[in-house]
Image 1 (cartoon, one colour):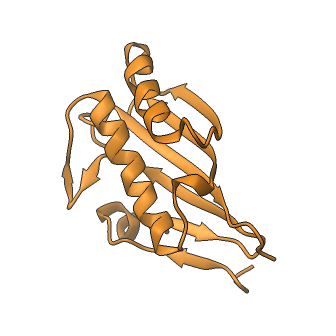
Image 2 (image 1 turned 30 degrees about the horizontal axis):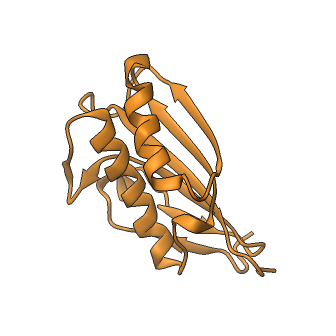
Length: 132
């Protein structure tokens, strides 16, 4: 299944350690971006859920940019949070970034992430129009 598949690796610490790509574009134009957190330059950036959500989506946007895509190409988002109390702040960040795009979206409460100071992780799926 590697014919025509493009893979983006950003050098984030867990990509090499766990053997995954930040983003994968399939020949049909579907782009899957792995879970992104508020880790920038190897350090956790942004303290609260709103800031972590913005930073996490920006990590995803940087991966999309390497494929020539942007937030306007996003068709689905998933937001994983560790506390129900963070729903409004993470939702506010999502609305600011995607209000004009309106992708399908899910917000899921989970028990935690690989680093306990992380409170948000996001995934995005994008679509390249005219592919295949």
